[in-house]
Amino acid sequence: MNPLYRIPALILTAFCHAVVAYHSLEQRYTKKKFLIYSILYIVCFVGLSICAYFAKGMASLLVYVGVVISLFLFFCIVSWDSFPKKCFIYITYFGLWTVVDNIMNLTLHLFLPQISEVAEYYMVVVLRNVCLLLLLFLYEKYVAAMICSLTVSGKNWWRLALIAVLFYVLQFVVYIWYLNNVMSYAFLLLSFVTLTIVMCAVYGVVLSYIDYMKKDAESALIRQNAEYLSKRLSVMQDEEATYRRFRHDMRHHLVTIAEYAKTGDTSAILSYIKEYDAEISETAVKQYSVNGTVNIILSVYAGKTRESGIDFSVRCNVPKELKVREIDLIALLGNLIENALHGCQESGKENKSIKIYIRMQNSMLMILCNNTCPSHLKLSNGLPVGKSIGISSMLSVCQKYGGNLEYKIKEENCSAYVVLHV
Image (cartoon, rainbow, N blue to C red):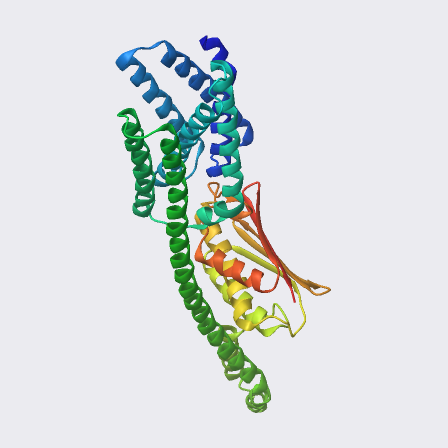
């Protein structure tokens, strides 16, 4: 077949690769930059593929290796993912691509043996791309969220990549058997289909196990975090009780001052007032909200932000009683401000700020947290890439109350929106 006839099909194939890369990887660039890199990759892919058609012997093999490497480099360039994770996704996709290509070729050879070479070539390309895009759709719907949320170490990503490599090796072995006349076309097709099903099943079991272990570890850390914040809450409650006691004892202090005044001992009066003022200042808790739990959480972080030189402002309008469990408020509001505090500290900026807005509207508790953030912070599906245990804890609370958590970045400021139905 004239190689010029192949060019539209090669463009379609390279376009499919770019679509898969865009939807299966954490994107490093904007859509416009990704499009530019995709066009460059498509040109490279088409050029190398045409060269492979004319090359012979070892040269043909080297060009084929170049085609494989160009796709891998494209995956690496456009993605923020770690290198082991990129390898895992690339090898998995390449293995699926080859097995689907083999299945389509064998199916047409068995059921449409009289079809022309050009028609067969284009039918294979179209059917292969349709199958791969369908698999991509299923991946996005059922698997992508779990893959993005996995906090898997590089070593484990390499292990997952090894599964994909073994799958590809098995394909190669099966094909070698076929070339040695060990099996028929029909048995070869059945072997490839079986391998694909087994691979998907193995991935399903492995990823489900990893996700289960991750959620189990997160639950333990969430409990520890809640216990830690509860202890800090108890300390703040003790401090507030002490402050109330001081206010209650004010009458006795006034009597003492009056006695000093009767004797005309002004120096004693001033000394007593100074001592009392210092004692009150050390234990005073600023009132941010009439809700005790919300007020104390805000007070805790007001102190931490003050120590870090971060401007901290609050506008809070919630009732004294909220239909949210205390431990849930601690997990949600505590982690929200804790993450904002870390974002400010990591930003490296001179002027840092955290602004908290909390209010009730009808039956919804709405929280908005604006904070200075580092320039390298990236979002995926409205959440920070590589989200922390704190984010998982907040998501758990939002899910419990039928709410939502969403992050946005604008001009190096991060905004976190929380809505709970209470």
